[in-house]
Every structure is written in C-alpha cells, then in structure tokens.
Length: 88
Image 1 (cartoon, rainbow, N blue to C red):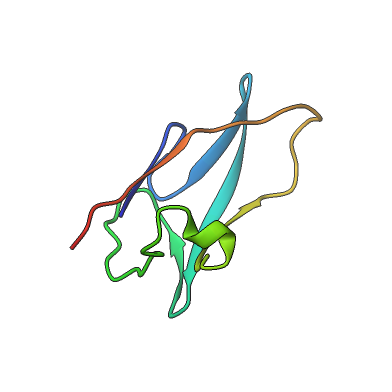
Image 2: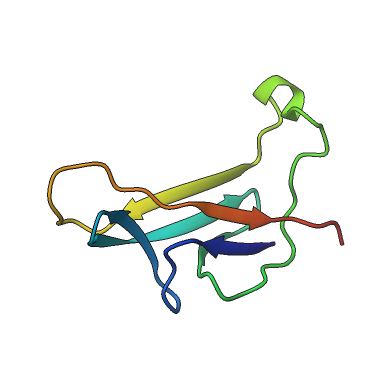
C-alpha cells in the first residue's frame, strides 16, 4: 500500500482551507497491527477482507483514523488521500 496526499509535505499530511493549513495524522489498523501512516513509505503485510463487499460489513477488518491538529479558523478544510493497494 502506498499513501499519497495532495497536501503532503515530507512526512506530514495537511488539510487546506484557502491559504490555511492544518496538519493531520492517519493511522491504519487491521486485526494484527496499527501503524501511523506517512506519505513516503510502502506498507506491507496488511490483510484486507477477501470479500468484495466485506460480506455486507460483517467481515470488515481495516480501519483508517484521521486525527487533525487543533487550531485554524472556522471553515471547511480538505485534502485528497489516495491509497494504492496491490496484491502480494
């Protein structure tokens, strides 16, 4: 898996609202591990569901958590995060 953020800077992800930026962290968890993701690394060994639709969510086994730093003006902040996934 290779993460890529449109507003990434080094190992930091950033949400944008006009000229304002707020850093955020992304954590990926599955049944076996939890890893803080940076936008410059490949991550190996994740075990996603083998069902196309996760058996109607009964076989979900991966979680993505986003935690933004406090601060910034009121408004809508956004970023586009793309996760590239390929089989072993």
